[in-house]
Amino acid sequence: MHLIPLYTHLILLTLGNAFLVTLVAVYLNGLGAPAAQIGLVGSAFYLGMLGASFFADRLIQRLGHVRALVLCCVTLALAAVALTWTSLLPLWLALRMVAGMAAAVSFVAVESWVLGVAPLHRRSSAMARYMLVYYFSYGISQLFIDWIPAGHNAAFWLATGLCALAMLPLLWAKKPDLSAEAGANANSGKPPRADRALGLAGCLVAGMLLGALYALMPIQLQQLARGDEIGLYMAWLILCGMAFQLPNGSLADRLGKRTMMAVQTLMIGAACLLLWESGGDGMLILAFALLGAGVFTLYPTTMSYACGKMHGRALVKMTQKLMFAYSIGSLTGPMMAGMMLEKFQSGLFLFIILLVAGWALWLLLVRLVLDKPLGDTA
Image 1 (cartoon, rainbow, N blue to C red):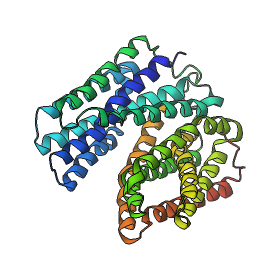
Image 2 (tube, rainbow, N blue to C red):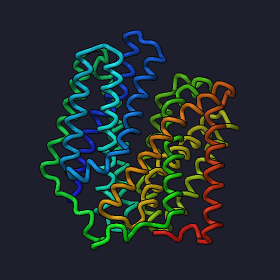
Image 3 (cartoon, rainbow, N blue to C red):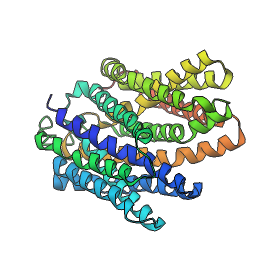
């Protein structure tokens, strides 16, 4: 119950920010902007997220979680409404980069808050609830595109209002005490370096997978003659990812996080093999269900694994590093998958298979080197 104000803030901020991400692309396309320019503006947002991963922990440490989130809301609201004041490309790039920085700080603050106040044996479940709220809000935000004309300034004002409104629930948010269980030494719960490296690699892989799916799955579906069903398949993909969040979190807490990483890897690999070999509707639906359930749960699982039993400043710093790894993956994944998609008809699926094969090999090597059962981790 004590996280309800935080989740309410997350819903409102995600509704505004995620809607704006799509709105910017649709708005520029309606103005006849070149595809390269639209892609450049979109990349500026993620470049800002990458840049913020270098200072987010210090900002949160200085301001505190609540004030840092308020600052993010104000920044995102101003950056949204300022887009209506100018049409100059350099200013749009700067505004979207600033918005990306604010979004990254917000992610680090919320995720470290959720992990920090959760019991150690329930951190995966806590992250599952967080991701469920986030993906639900993200999905709902896309409906605004059909309700409000993208070429009208009212759409930007709606995004601005939602980001500003996200400050209100924080008035009832209880300031988190992230060092309560860590005692005097906030680093006492730091996991071994190999575990942290595995978590960082998992966030990198998750970023590459999600970035590639968001950017290129519609194009891949068109190449498979499924252009009229893109919205349905994308919605099914995200819905299955949402549906598996809570079961994944519960199983990760019971069986171990590395066990669930292995399960997710098998699900993604099986999904891609089905997509590669089959064109039937039934097989596609099953493959997208496995793909969504595996890809969308990899990030929270690897994140909670990498954080171990950390608290306080150490937890915030680790969350920042994981955001950095995820941002790198989000930037590089679509580029690498795009090159493969140009050469092969099912290039996106081939990219995912190769990436997941490498990730599976990493998991196997970690198990052999550390000489631990896959489920033997908190």
